[in-house]
Each structure stands twice: as C-alpha cells, then as structure tokens.
Length: 145
Image 1 (spheres, rainbow, N blue to C red):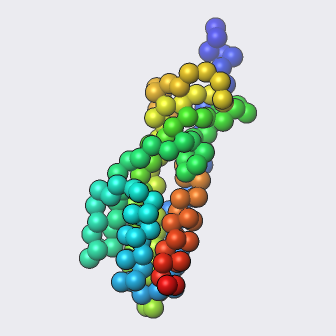
Image 2 (image 1 turned 180 degrees about the horizontal axis):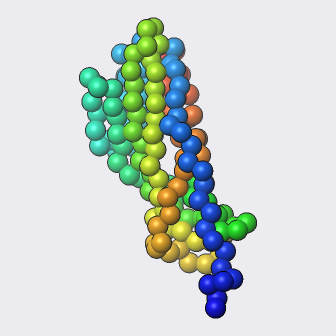
Image 3 (image 1 turned 90 degrees about the horizontal axis):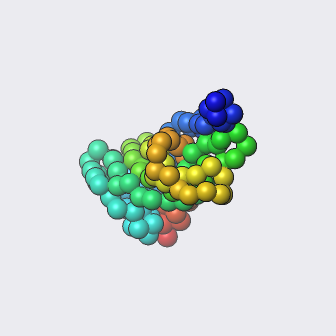
C-alpha cells in the first residue's frame, strides 16, 4: 500500500567519455597527468605509459562533488559515492588527445538532507564533469611551465 506513494528513483543521464586535446607533446602531457593525479592524492591502480592508460582505484567522495546520483522526485540523492577514473592519452601530432572514463556508484546515501545513510540499494551515478575539467586544467598548467 505504501509502495504506491513512494517516489521512484530517477537516475542521471550518463554523459559520454570526457575528451580534450592538450596542446603539448605526448611525453610532456604524460608527465603532467601523473603529476596532477599525484597532487589530487588519487591511488593509482594501473599506469601503462606505452599504451597511454592510467587507472585509479575507487575513492570515496561526497555525492555532488564528482558524482550525480539522481533524485527521488525533487529531492536529490545525498551522501557518499565511490568513484574511479580511467585516463587514456594518445599522441595526435604536436598535441595529445586525452579521454577520461568514469565509474561511479553510491556507497552510503539518503533522500535529500534528512534521514540516516543507507548502503542499499546501490545506485549508479554519472560524472558531474568537475574532476575531468579540473584535471585537464591542472595538466595544461603543468605543461606550460
């Protein structure tokens, strides 16, 4: 009887992978990516310079910072999300093409700002794009030095 009154969870629309060009050669961009990720204090799971892949371990962040986890009606999902990123870099002439994929899900969440945090059910989240944009801004700043 109460299930008919509950608001369904509305998942965010998943964005495509984040793609940008960095106006620097591959070697400079690669070093800048590693430096920028180290400054963000992200644990790296895999670093393969020859194939241009960097993968991070999952880290906990507040929902809304890097992850949009949807809503229940007009109330946003709040709490914590587990996020990880995979960065692909490949040379493109005098520039480097960088693609960032993200994987995000809730770890502890609640409807709006009230109530206790729950771990179940787990909801898939979408990137807000902040991490990706900030990382590429940091990379550009490092390669300009």
